[in-house]
Length: 115
Image (cartoon, rainbow, N blue to C red; front, side):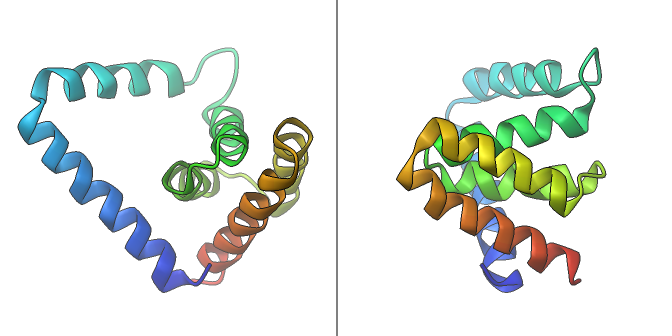
């Protein structure tokens, strides 16, 4: 995934979330609160939680989830090796389709790291 495509996917996600917030504000407020609570530092660090979210996004075949959480994992200090291990778990849990999305996640990480 090229850097331009990564930015495009994340920009699209942001615009779509803004529109959803406009048309279903209560639902999106509740969802955003859930995201903040679930991803906050606790017994597990934010970095570990973001790596978990990447793995789940890969296993669930959610390109937007992968793009969003790879960016956050990198932001919170995840290394390429840590991401690779998270991808391995996703592949274990998601099978062949997870291989495709795992490759996309690794390419996105590399694109972000090269900035």
